[in-house]
Length: 78
Image 1 (cartoon, rainbow, N blue to C red):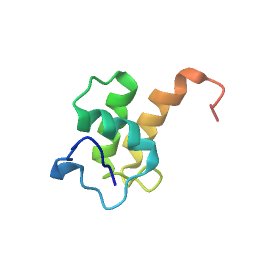
Image 2 (image 1 turned 180 degrees about the vertical axis):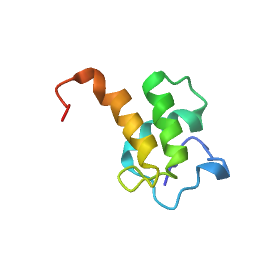
Image 3 (image 1 turned 120 degrees about the vertical axis):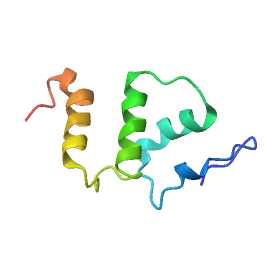
Image 4 (image 1 turned 45 degrees about the horizontal axis):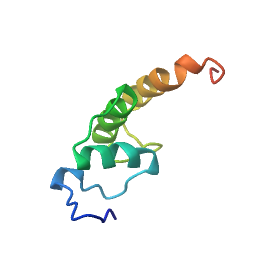
């Protein structure tokens, strides 16, 4: 539940379950603040996966997100 400063989430942010990995981008969206590339990708994944990260049914989208976020680190490669 998100409470504070009279902040009301629009209905399209109503997820049955929200993975904590999406909390940052949800707060930025709800507050109408600018997002960098990471949080933009995180918001898009949240929308496509309906708030679920590990249980996302769109495997291609999840793999693409992970490659974009973790790929530059190189030490997390298989």
